[in-house]
Image (tube, rainbow, N blue to C red; front, side, top):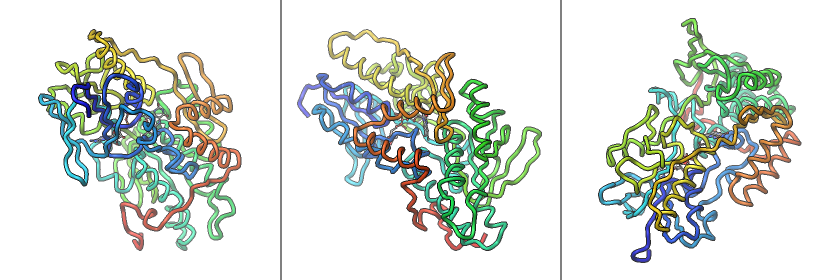
Length: 436
Ligand SMILES: Cc1cc2nc3c(=O)[nH]c(=O)nc-3n(C[C@H](O)[C@H](O)[C@H](O)COP(=O)(O)OP(=O)(O)OC[C@H]3O[C@@H](n4cnc5c(N)ncnc54)[C@H](O)[C@@H]3O)c2cc1C
């Protein structure tokens, strides 16, 4: 790195980090993006990787490739394990050892992780859907469940393999439920000899009284109707209080408990901030929000540390939700602030979030969306969903590949990515010969 040039370190190559890095193209600074992954992950489409529509490469272009034409940016693979706010040094760990990255400005965009509300032991049997590993594991479990059912002679055990429980009825749970329903009713038709995949039960549970609570009640009701048409069983006001290999324990609003016997569970009930938030709080004296996000000033900097920005899912500001759009806009804001300071204007500017609306795809050809008071649903919603996702997918190759897969599976009902190994089917439970 050239001596005297302003050094910007960006932790995280998610939406917030990558948009910040790209915004600094041509700025008089050197940008280092450090992440424990080599790629930028388009999380909103992970459910399509998990259900065999898209391949992992479609949603995860290498960060190095995305930034290849930006000479002032470099990419470092490593897990950030420390931030020394006094010395202005970030420490990243990799098999090579520990790398010290000095900075003049720091943007922390480390995102969030699934929250099991104090029951991390649930994760073994009910993986979340936050990473490529999760998506491939869930894909293995879903397609593997049909395989196990095909080989299982006992009707009760077979029914357990053919029951899928989605815990959490936000966009991820809803989108997964819709896709597993279409997979079982349409895409897998005629593929098995001993079972009829269409008999699969898909159960969507949530502690809240309705699905998609972030959407208007009428849109939420339309989405629920569409899911029921596909054969999804919706169980609102149902708290999951136990998860094991063979099923889940559910408590209703009346306090009564019951058991749902199911071999395949996916958890999308909550998120918590990356542990880097707590580290920053200790090292830079910041406060933490309810889910471990870092409380920031209106310009996204830490109190007393105008050189440290926290953006995206890790940021706690004005109750903004953990959305891709918030992450992109706050990442852009942090980078603009740095660029303006380098141009000689040190006055902080408030981050102002512009709500561009929300979308959720319920099934093939059916999505809901809202922006302010405007609501769309059905095919028009789906066309908007398709367009928005194509526009925001990073990289030309990813867009072309995703479009190809969408044409193939959404118009032709087939799934391009179904290959699964026994190791993926058993995944974290690693019990291929388990009798239960
Ligand atoms: C399944 C799913 C579906 C979603 N659907 C939608 C949707 O439909 N619409 C919407 O608006 N939003 C959606 N979201 C939310 C959206 O994806 C997030 O709000 C957004 O990704 C947050 O961006 P971010 O950059 O803050 O964090 P992330 O995208 O999570 O990126 C954080 C990055 O930091 C890296 N990192 C973390 N800790 C470290 C460390 N210690 N060292 C090095 N690197 C580290 C991670 O590897 C990661 O690359 C969805 C999220 C999920 C999981």
